[in-house]
Amino acid sequence: MMNRTLLYGEGLFETMKLPISEKRLRLHYERLKSSAEFFGIPCPSYEEFKKDCTIEVKEQTYLKFCLIAKGESYYGGKANDYGKLILVKRFKPLNGSVKLTISPYRRHSADPTCRHKTTNYLFNVVVKRQAMEEGFYDGIIVNERDEVCETSSANLLFLKGNTLYTPAKESGILEGTTLRILKEFMDVKEERIKVEKLKDFEGAFIVNALIDCLPVEIEGFGLRILKDVSLEIKKLLKGSELSYNYK
Image: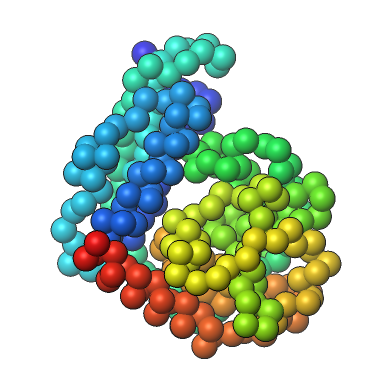
């Protein structure tokens, strides 16, 4: 059997911060399994996934679980088995705020791969690399309708008044586990957000499983750096993790 992940990028991955709650781990697995079914990649059971991902750590650590597709060598063929690659590294959290720019590279909202966490990550690499070369932390990906999607590795939140907004799934985003948890604990409205409308918001944030939440500055839009709001979101996430551990 050939390694279809190496040949064609036909693989999936999940990145998580350790230690991790049972609920958060299940969210990662549910996304992995759903994507595996979509692409026709065999997938381990939750019990196997949990055994691979639940390790004792003495410091903040991140774990990357890669699901490797094995099968036919022809690119139009199918996977009929799976392999695993598990990477564990020390994690140093980001503090303060970061700067984003609008990426020149576009995404089409109908692209099915953008809704799954695949190992075919070259587009994200190009977005991230270009932004870093220009002195930014990351780039904001925009679709064919000039709607904001996400960054190369995080979902976006925007604040207006007392309401948080996030780009609609229809714009072409991968919904992260952190965003899903936030939606359970607070009112986060999905909306199609045109780039030109970013100026109407008071502040913006990036969220994912490793950084939790960070306030951001977006080049050319003059949004405020709302560190206090970011800290409140982090507290909510921490509280939700604690409550999940007892469910």
